[in-house]
Image 1 (cartoon, rainbow, N blue to C red):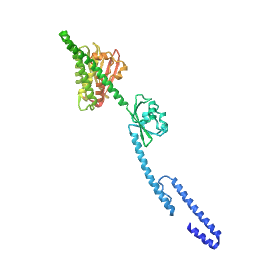
Image 2: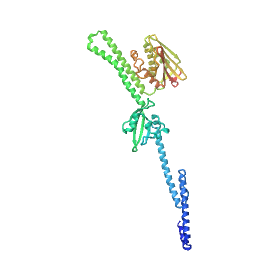
Image 3: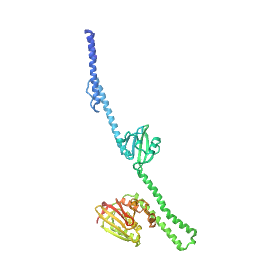
Image 4: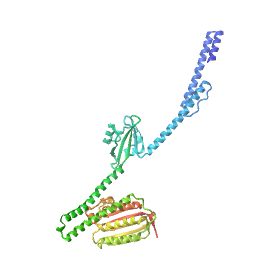
Amino acid sequence: MAAVLALALLAGHYRGTDAALALVILGFLAAAILLARHMRQLVEWTRQAAGSMPPQVEGLWGSVFAELGDRFQRELIVRDKLSAELGRFQQAAQAMPEGLVYLADDDSIEWLNVMAEQHFDLDRRRDLRAPITNLVRQPEFVAYLQAGQYAEPLVIHSLRRRERTLQVQIIRFAGSRRMVVSRDISQLERLENMRRDFVANVSHEMRTPLTVVGGFLETLIDGLDDFSREEVLHFLKLASEQSNRMQRLIEDLLALSALETGAPAALEEAVDVPELMREVARETELLSAGRHSVKLALQGGGALLGSRKELHSAFSNLASNAVRYTPAGGHIELGWRVDREGGEYWVKDDGIGVDPEHIPRLTERFYRVDRGRSRETGGTGLGLAIVKHILTRHQGELAVSSEPGKGSRFAMRFPAARIRQD
């Protein structure tokens, strides 16, 4: 540009002002064309994919392109790092067992993880940018969100899945930003309900025998001389029966606690099933005291890997239940068979049977179809709960079929991995 102006001045000195002016105009035009060319190169380069090489230009513009290229490369590296960090953060958030929902200032959903989708029945492709109050419609949640007091969590039940209980808490971050954190506490709530029921049932079961024993003792203390020796012995016998009932209850509670907290039964001990069943059959005949016909049906032999003590408890629990719920003169069958799928122990009777509606709850603690009859026969209400835990520790399953007035069949299935043939 300076050279063009110098030529223009010389030409003006020797040839006149018009020629000089023409050369100045030509010089400015050439500079404008060059500038436009470099600007077009700059625009085209910036429109290309990130990381492309800058145009190769000499002079001042070459320095400009080189500097911009370096800046773009540094920014690209920083952006890639930030993108990788964001990706790792989102992966971690997706892997969390809690639900996470990021809210905008207008309560619309900006981002949520998979667990939040499950907890609130949301769909990220459909529900992003939608107000959360239009999607989570529990009145207590809407009131909690709008109140702005988030120090304590909120417990709500899913509208679509009433068995699901959620603990929800809103956390503020980055100033006015908010995040909804949800936890599925359904299992904890079930365990708490079980704990309350357990305490109530134990208290109820203990109250009757304690009342009976206390009543007899109080009666004897107040007027021992008023009763004959036979009456005193009768009172003591009844008190002893109630004491034995409490002892059985405590023993079953301790056994159940040990099963719940212990490790799975080891595979090292090979229990001879036919020998164990003959032992259980003898005990069943003693318990029956000749009131029932007890039959042993062995359709094969073999051994069962596990704990003999636990298996004996499970086998005898089913057999003793059959004695308790089969009227005098009835028939009880204890059976064992082995097939390709594993082994099966069953107890079959022609007793009073169980209505189908009760079968799913038979293994619950203290659940009784007929509470009065169970107490009369000396049951604690924990036998089938113990059987259930023993089977779980041996990877087994309990199958029950029954018809009121015709009898029941309780079968324990064990996997083939626990069977050893002779």
